[in-house]
Length: 96
Image (cartoon, rainbow, N blue to C red; front, side, top):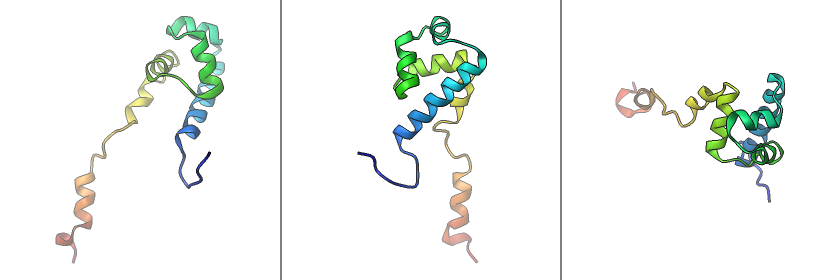
């Protein structure tokens, strides 16, 4: 059962990742078989990923490396650098 809300849910993100991956793979001119050979990820895993979005994190990172997108993962779970500064803006001590 799908829940409704404003934000994305995990299945939305899985589908978007799979679609973007497939588009990028085709733009680069790689077949699923060639990508499997170069990445070390099984052909079955690549097919399943492109159809359903299901893939292990390690396999996803291997595919991202071959597609030259591994650095895109640097932003995932990145802490907010200025969180303390933002908190200061809203503290009672600094209000006029």
